Length: 301
Image 1 (tube, rainbow, N blue to C red):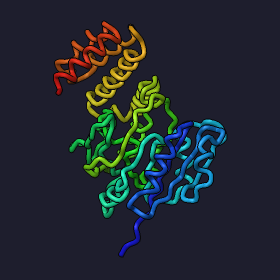
Image 2 (image 1 turned 135 degrees about the vertical axis):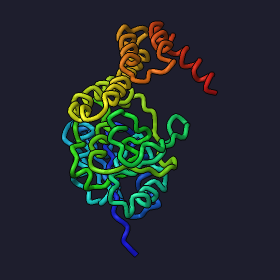
Image 3 (image 1 turned 180 degrees about the vertical axis):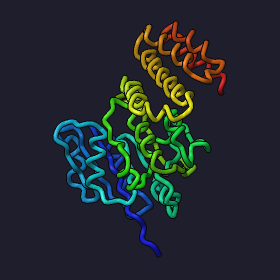
Image 4 (image 1 turned 60 degrees about the horizontal axis):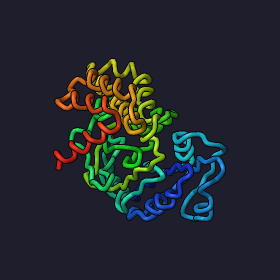
């Protein structure tokens, strides 16, 4: 019987008590050959009060706040696993997450990543059948959900070939996926194996969510040029929508929101029939946006 490969679970943390639950989910896996590394990016050992004395976790404190990807890189450099599983400190793994991911990965050297479905906002969200195999185009379009940091089991050699530890204001997982898709294929376990939290201080809810996307599009401009024009257009459209949504949710009214929503529709190669209504809703600011969302939810239900 072949020995089970070692999986390193790396958890960067920054002033979150939730890290305790993330750690418990990692050490409670049905898959036995797991090492858990927590990298505290608070600069003052905030998580040490819960983790410093644990013998089942390697707890590392960084000197000063260096950023999530720097913390991930530190954890990776300290790890020994054949496979790496990054886990955000406010997310949790289901008990069989690693076991089922390794089963999918086993014997398939072409795979760089195996990801899974996720439970988010009380809903089970599954991978799309098109987001497997060679997925570089999907990654460049920012169309890989629910593939993200906490759902990916990654082959170590793919990380070693890539440049995935770039510090961005947001969108780290999007840049990771582009890098990893350059060096291998993706597949998924079509089950909900991760619980994702919606934290009010998450970078996905900040300006960094769209600022990081703009930086990614600029960083990979030459790679976009090797693909059909609509690939970059879709990425820009999604980014402008993210920007518009941020300002609609954080301002009563914003000209920037209206402008970005217009750009979202203008550059989208397949804008759809809802685009005029999105622009109209943005003109009426946050009240109009909330009303349009309620109307959409009623139609969908």
